[in-house]
Length: 92
Image (cartoon, rainbow, N blue to C red):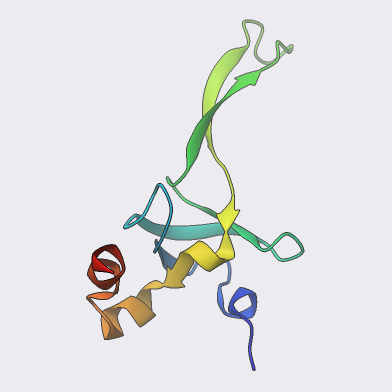
């Protein structure tokens, strides 16, 4: 049996099916197989403080995507086969 982390690959489109960002979709930027986590474009954004450097003398506060668990995502092509999956989960 194939594991979910083997199916979700970089540059594939996924949908978040549970958690705070439920219903959001985006492209997979990175898959962390050992941690069972994925980073999705424009999902789970967090503000990070950047240290002062020669390139950035003032420092900065930037927004970055943080990883979410792979069990909370589903491939978008699978969602097209089951369009009511997010509605079914919230009702049950």
